[in-house]
Amino acid sequence: MNSGQVFDKEHIFERVWGLEHEGDSAVVAEHIRRIRVKFTEISDHVYISTVWGVGYKWVG
Image (cartoon, rainbow, N blue to C red; front, top):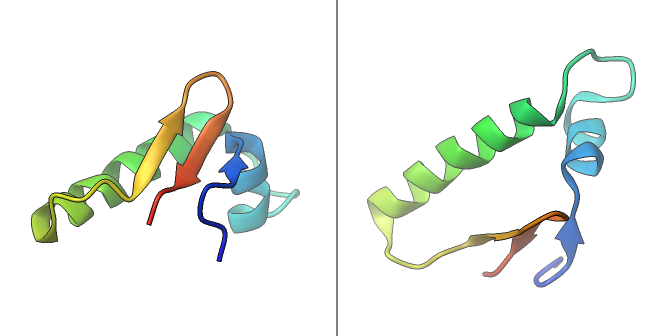
């Protein structure tokens, strides 16, 4: 649905944990890393791409 759209880490954090939760974008980076590991266990396709200085995008 959002293929190609870039989401910054702060937007992802707010959508997942909400505005009231304390934390930072490093939490998002760690979760993205773990998700990528799980994807590589089942496929060689890259599903999440990093847009340096901006955030992440779903490549699908």
